[in-house]
Amino acid sequence: MAEPKEIWPTDEISAAVVDMTQKVSEEPDAYLHFLQLQAHHPQYTADTLLWLMAKEPDDQVFRTVPEWNEHGRFVKPGEKGIPLERGMVRLLDHDGWTNPNMEWVFAAKQTWAKESIPPEPEQRLSGQRLEMGLRTLLELSPVEVKIDTGASSSEIRYDPERKEILLPQGIGAEEAFRGLVREILQARMDMEMDEGYRREIFQQDAECLSWMMCQRYGLPCPEPDLSRLAQNNAPWNTEERNSCLTSISWLYSGMEKNVSREVNIQKSVRQKIGQAMGTNEHGQGKSKALVQTR
Image (tube, rainbow, N blue to C red; front, side, top):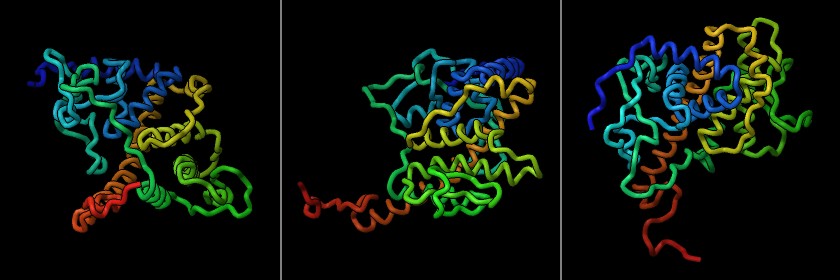
């Protein structure tokens, strides 16, 4: 199917981004939708997500025609894609660069499948992949991460006086993952500020970043507290609010890229070793004679 040739004018995209910036920065449900879209589309900039929300406010997944085809779905005849201008899609393999080409994406409701296909599972982190994700987060931390032998808190906590992230003894891997994401942001903000760091200033952003990472990797995480969203953004104009959305978007995409790269490298290595040894990536033999049944 040929992609449509017509292109929405840039001023329409700009106007939609302005309108959605206001909506997302004031309405908790809209902001949570923005975060969910970002979680599933780390390659998209904040403005891209706002544009997609304006065009298809109820959809959660957007892909190009080839991407949908790879997932066993096809764009319905007559459907028109949403244009993404140059620079609206990040090239995550090249830091700081964005796609110089025009792209069209289609929402899930614009597609069909030849047969019923169950929803695509999250890129769930578990076992060795979760361990590798945790190691990557430790490397990304701007401060040292230590076990809190004094048990001063029941949750992971950044200590601004000691410049350390403290982990309670016996904490589970999933809880450690979501807590580390949250506290790494707190530590990074403290490191970047000359003075005046206060935890509560960045609490909402830290919770949002943690929630997005957990959404991406299928890990449990409570929704961020957005009860003060409108109040927190009240002092800022539209440009400043958009800048905040852009910042959280870049923070997430950068962290997601690092974690995904490492866990996928390990998965690829295990698959190659498994192929050489006649096992799958979990170390299970392919030969029926070697498989024990219960």
